[in-house]
Length: 37
Image 1: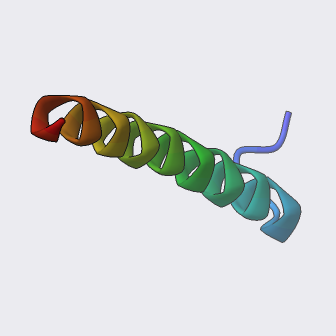
Image 2 (image 1 turned 180 degrees about the vertical axis):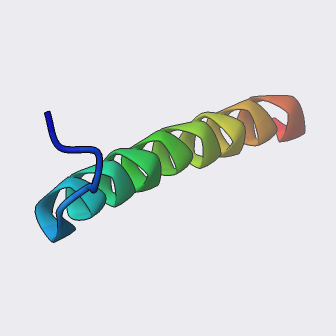
């Protein structure tokens, strides 16, 4: 077992984090649009 994460592992983790943040912000934008209308 290797404890040191490789560069590819870090890239995958970063990509997942970005997707989660994008989904959350997209959801917030939809909520704001519904409230404003």
